[in-house]
Amino acid sequence: MASAQPQQINLSELDLPQLADVRRQLEDELSHLSNSFTQLKQAQAKFKSCMENVGEVKQENKDKVILVPLTNSLYVPGKLCDLENVIVDVGTGYFVKKSRTEAFKHYEAKVEFIRSNVENLQEMIQKKQENMSYLVNVMQMKLQEQSAASSKASK
Image (cartoon, rainbow, N blue to C red; front, side):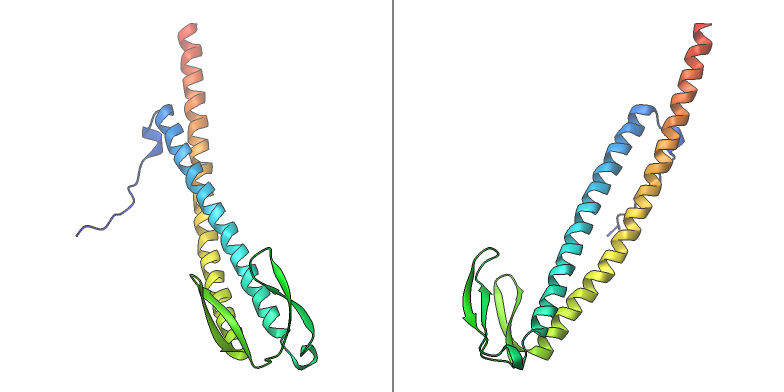
């Protein structure tokens, strides 16, 4: 089975409409990568917030009235009774009872996993931006050549 290797294209061999197509494709890829980056950063912030919330489960907060989230926008009053265990959303609608230590480690692992993905994504975005810059330079050279050729032809 053949693996899909990205093809190398010599941009100087392409004409302006082809370069414009490549530019649109690069812009789309950059937009998608930037959106993914934003979503990952939001998820990372959410997990960090969960870590802080687990840290708030402590003796001095026992039996205090707190707001318990039912949905993203609906909260109901409740009391903190169990100081040893918390309910952790492990994804796709599943919740698991974990000790505070296990919950903290769970969220810590999530934050670290996202951090490594964010770093990889940053590198990809930087490479795409460098490719875009090179492409724009090639397009500008082609436009200057075309302009010079048309001014010679009109003389």
